[in-house]
Structures are given as structure tokens and as C-alpha cells.
Amino acid sequence: AEEFRASVGNMVVKPLVHQAVKVDEKLYGMYTARVTPSQKVKFDLLSGSPAILQEEIDRQFDIRTIVVGDRVFSLEIYQIGESVGGVDYRKAKPKDLIYKPHYLPLNLEEKCVKLVKQLGLQYGALDFLLGKDNSYYFLENNPSGAWKYVADYGDHPIQQAFADLFNKVRLV
Image (tube, rainbow, N blue to C red; front, side, top):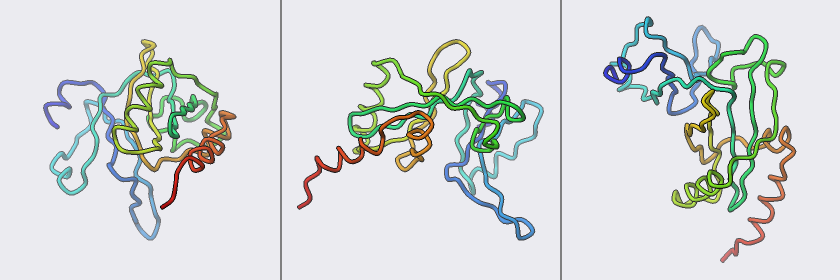
């Protein structure tokens, strides 16, 4: 972790599990956070609270992609106002987010479906960034990630995709 930190500029740290921490009877969520080269990091704490360490990518916007069977639905997520430059849009206030439907390149959609199937799943919530260099950067697949906002804000028929998939499943 220390070698990785030394090899990148800004780094982002994401807890493996979205946890809540209780401090003075208040609950606080743990989100992805930026760590600058000048910030002190206690890497010895990783043994008790594992995390994902990633190089921070200069982004145009975030993308949440939902895979249901062979169907793929994506949403662009922009942070505006007080949230501009944030590394975790989940921390933003609703007024500081703009959503737009997104359509991945076909070859990337095919790779998303293949990944989900190789994991033995029929559903995945994949997170990407579109970098300022116009490249797509895959961050993670969450096999139980939120999808409703992608359907609502992207005007995507995800509920119908679930219904179609369930109709194909034969119960024994």
C-alpha cells in the first residue's frame, strides 16, 4: 500500500463494505475518500478494515451501468454546485447531481455482460468513470448495487428487463 501510494498522486480509498460508524450516538457513513500526497495515512489500520486503494482518475463524469441478463443500461452522473470535484457522488445532495442516460460502446456493453456471466450472476451494478482523456475506467461490480435511480433518471426499462428475465427462469 505504501509503495502504491508513493507511485500515484491523489489516491482514492474505498471501504470494502459500506459501513456506518457510531460516534457520540450519531451514525456516519463511510464513503470513498480522496487522499492527497500530503495527508498522513495509517496503513497499519488496513488489517482491521480492508479497503480498495485506487489512483484517482480525472473524470468527466461517473457512470452506473446495470446488467440484467443480456441487457445493459447506463446513467451519467454529474456532480455540480457544492459537490463539484467530489470522488463519491453518493455523498452529494440531490440538488448537486445531474443524471443523463448513457450508452456504452457496444464492445464495452458486451464485456459487461460477459463479466457478469463469468461471475455466475444474472445481475450486476458496474461503476465506471469517463476520464477527461475520453477513456472508460472500470471501478467495480456490485452484485447487489442500486438500480432504481438508473431506471428513473435514465428512463431505462430495467423493471421490464427483470420481469423478462424472471419469466425465462424455470422453478423446479
